[in-house]
Length: 212
Image (cartoon, rainbow, N blue to C red; front, side, top):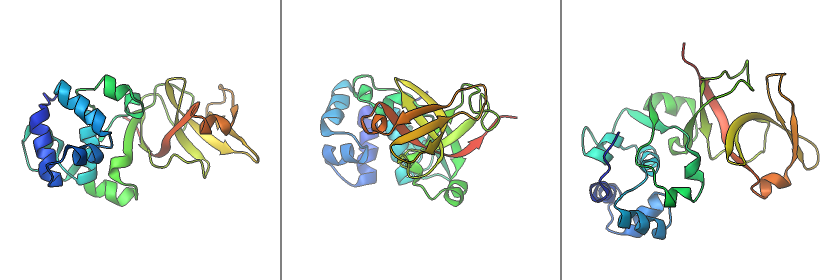
């Protein structure tokens, strides 16, 4: 668990960005200047934002948060998906710590064309996608691949719950959300529910692994 000191962390952010502007820091963290001011006033900053910054700029999280080790690293930390980062809750309830798993930078580069800052980990917590994905498996989600222009496995968020389903596009304005486990029923929804935000497409599943 990191003890995140706002002034020290923002000082290192300014060093990486070569700026003295708070607005520049806010933009690099993908938050509004108002949100940054709120974090500054509370003297705290969500670690999810820092992990994403490190992925984007190839900076060591240990260096950014604690000033330890080298500024760059052969490993990058992929954060574990936290639903709060996709809502305004992160402004009101900043998280002080983020769980992540370190991956070899070269392996990520060879496996994925996506920007590593767009990748998140998600742990499977049910058996609805067995045998493809089992309870306890971990997957990598590309959050920028969140437009249903092809069929595949996607991380969805509906009514506050997050889960993975196999998406099949249908002619017209409908899609099927399929479970690989035949014990679960197929759900058919209208694309309007995605447009309205009732169903949120977090991203496409690009890799899976499991503990042996």
